[in-house]
Image (cartoon, rainbow, N blue to C red; front, side, top):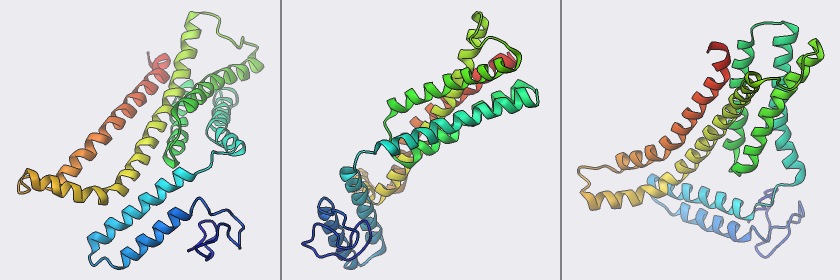
Length: 262
């Protein structure tokens, strides 16, 4: 067997890698299963069966990795917060400074940037790995509010205007602007979640196809093909997340531009 950390060869009875000194006890069942699957792969005669076993092996590795994964350390969690919340906050404040203070140009450009910029951060955050939604939703709310307050503070340093809104119209404008930033990030989160789920579905496709053939055979396979049935099921799963993402995008654009084009 090979060590899952440094890929050095280790004895089957070993619990610690002699090269990297990492504990491999928890990974031994997975490693044994991988060896077993690799031996079975060598005995499979056709390409379709190969693809089926490869997908099975990949799914097994993903499931075992999630099962034995250690909780994220505080340092990694703080790095994620800075990368996906702190960095877009700094970019939004920098854009505000350049557009409204340095170049004193139309606020429409700032609104457009505020709608577009948060989206890729949310997308790559949820595309990379499964995430808990509620903690990041709180982070999105913080990003939206902190961005608007920070922009108001920067403006007050230049012209001495109040940081906080002074009337109902200004409060509504602040809330709409915050909502446009938040919905943009949420749209990215949804699209990233759809992309991650799509990747998992592709891995499972080779495992599902044999089952679909059995189902189709029971329905009279001359009229329904496994490909068409699988495609229908896949579209039903994808459309839900896509429709929700499209809705949040529309809300983000509407709230971001309402005060300017309305």
